[in-house]
Image 1 (cartoon, rainbow, N blue to C red):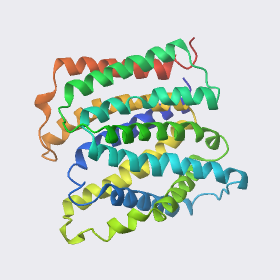
Image 2: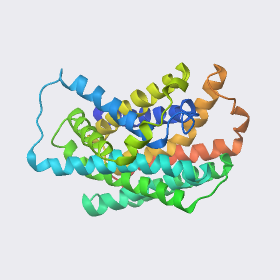
Image 3: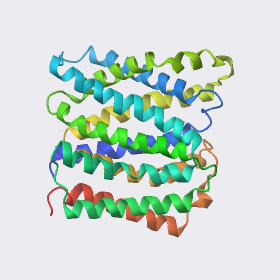
Length: 305
């Protein structure tokens, strides 16, 4: 495997590690301090400002007029729709349902990439996807006891998975013409534009009690903006430059494993509640299935039939 490809896989792993830590550290921010819509707005606003602050020091790269429409589509599906439906869906549905529904993303990516990019679906790749999905679903079933099923929430979560799958596929052509930083900067700029014309954004912002937000909560919000938004999208774009969207999406299967790992780590330092007693040999076996599935999809699935 070429060095650039290895770096892409490392970047994608870091992306999901950041997401995994975010699930633990961001607990309690919503809805007690911020609504899903306002949280998303601050994430997009903060990340967009960071992207432009860095971009002014990089070589200038203008986007072609013919690509503006594709950039806007990427922003719509990759930033606005997927984040709005995920946060609102998660607030309605149970944790067990969200864990299961999110595992459909790599499958959706593979199907969409086949039709839009003519990306070949190999038997080996399908085997890896199915193995990883099975491990993730079993781990979700074994590790979540959330209640409060909601068919509307489940629908929102599925729309989120479908939206992000579309984004991963349609962003690939842009990665072949522009640098990752240029792509993600303009994608977030258009995403911010969508949030600014979304009426509930203003209605819910004026309802925020900023005096009630403690320094600890501000630290968590900052981490979500910088770590789980700025770096994750940037590293995802870098990964897409060297690997296919179906391979990039397969790394979502590692998130349940990483969440458990961070729960154990943060509990040692008193940064989160102790969830280590929930880790069993059964769950370790499911984690192994996930890692093997990702490895088959990423390493063998590219060239094997």
